[in-house]
Every structure is written in C-alpha cells, then in structure tokens.
Image (cartoon, rainbow, N blue to C red):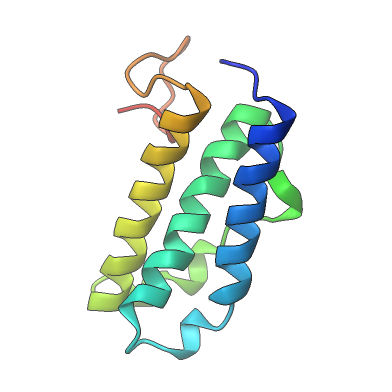
Length: 114
C-alpha cells in the first residue's frame, strides 16, 4: 500500500474529525439525511484509514459502533449513512492512492477491495 504523506494524513484526519464533530448527534436527527450522510462519509474515511495505517483508531477516532446503526439501515436516513460511508471509502481510497481493484491478498473486509 502507498505511504501517506504527513500533510495528506493531517488533512484527511481534520476532515474526518470535523465531520464527526459537526454530526455527533446524528442519531437524534433521523429527519436530517445530510447529517447522516456526512457522518457516514467520515466513518468510511476512518475505515479506509484503519486499513491503510493498520490502526484501530486512526486520527484518534474509532469508527461508529455498527450495533447503533442496525435498526436504521432500512430507513431513508440509514441509507443516507451507508451511501455516505461508501463514498467516504471510495474517495479516501482515491486520494490516498490505494487502488480499489488490487489487493495483495483478497480481503473482503478491506474497504478498498471491490
């Protein structure tokens, strides 16, 4: 996997932290799909950085607890979260230079694997 420059890592971490902080109360606002999307986007970023950096809590942040999201997944706001998460995964793979089509060993949990 490519190595991240400290500058790029700092920018990614700042964005992920800002999105998480701005949308910290997303569970209390099912009417706000954008809030759910943004929180999902940040989560997707963190999941990718977990793989790239081989850290449980990249940027000092752990991804959201899946058990809190299960009950929402069939609702519009839950779908917005998952779409945001997928876009966060995909776009973080793109900017970090991780090729989503190639992995040394196939790993279905790897966020950049297709």
